[in-house]
Amino acid sequence: MQDLIPMVDVEEKVHKDSIQLFCSLIEEHYGKRPAIYGTNRSYNTYCAPDFNDYILMIGRYGKKKPIIKGKGRYSIWQYSENGKIDGIKKPVDLDRIHPDFDLSRLEM
Image 1 (tube, rainbow, N blue to C red):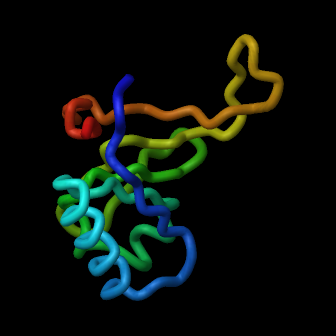
Image 2: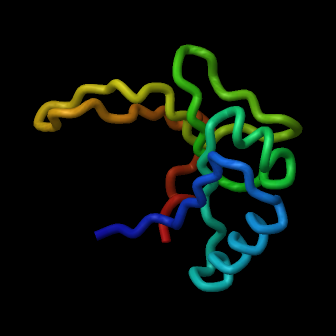
């Protein structure tokens, strides 16, 4: 069994101070920073550039890669919500890992 780090979902209006406090509590408890998930718009609106050095999973459906405000880049790009996988009846999300991202950063 392999445990993955927690992920903070930021898709609605939230204050950066609240995100920072929550991330600090997670890091204190688990010893690792959480990943941050948001749509391209929500991340850039509520988080960037203050959290650009975190692991970022960014939802941006289509062919255009996520663009992060400031110095930063996505770690994981959720590019579709209509994937098909044998054995799963409903559509699933599809993701791409940034070529320079080290997957071991996701492990606990």
